[in-house]
Length: 224
Image 1 (cartoon, one colour):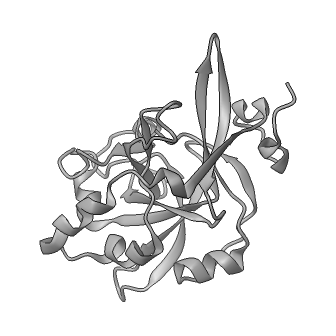
Image 2: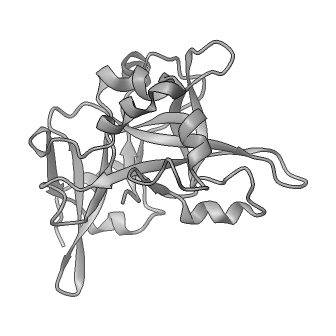
């Protein structure tokens, strides 16, 4: 799964990498957690151009009676996303890319869990495949939310967890965001584990275990 990540890339680099301006203040984040606001790129329905938007992390289906269901939908399994009632409509019509510098995973060591930071080997920002949805609850403003797709873990991540985020290479951004419905089969090759040789992992501070802690020292090597 993917339950915590970072995004501290400069706005100028993000805008260039994803081909869209950033219309809001995007502060560096070192411990993004579910239910918080995350930045993602989607295609506009009116002109097809890419745009950065803010989404609540944890997808709320349009038919949900309560927004709290989103707390259970921070991830969607790539193998079943096209069939699951909670995700299939968004998979067909509302795909997005969630940028991150890396994500965290925990490896069990005896009675303890040791946190690790996982990122691309060249330290470029990664794009994780996501879905977004718009929910209109009774008496409140509409909520736009998202989920991150996961797939089977590669050899690097498997010792820590059996799942990992679906990472989309830059050359496939347009395919993921705008593939026509009749060509959905073209998306399947994207929903696979990222090559382990192009990623790295290292232990980080136990302070990351607290989701309310958010500063660059979380990426320090552990001293505990």
